[in-house]
Image (cartoon, rainbow, N blue to C red; front, side):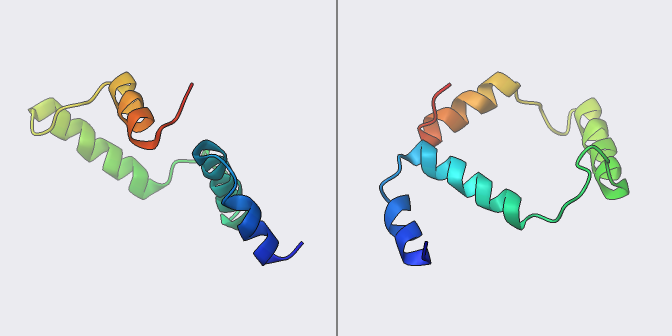
Length: 78
């Protein structure tokens, strides 16, 4: 299959199917790594965000609200 055929077929997909295909391609291109391992810079960032929340410098958004906004923005369904 050529890239041109892939392009032609991809535009025929629904938005949700294109997002799924994009995720598939991203996974192919991503370096293989253990995603369960939190890196040092990630731990530092998490600690800083936790402290900002504790001090009231930032506010948290409920996961359900974020999910709802993403579903509305991108037309996703459950």
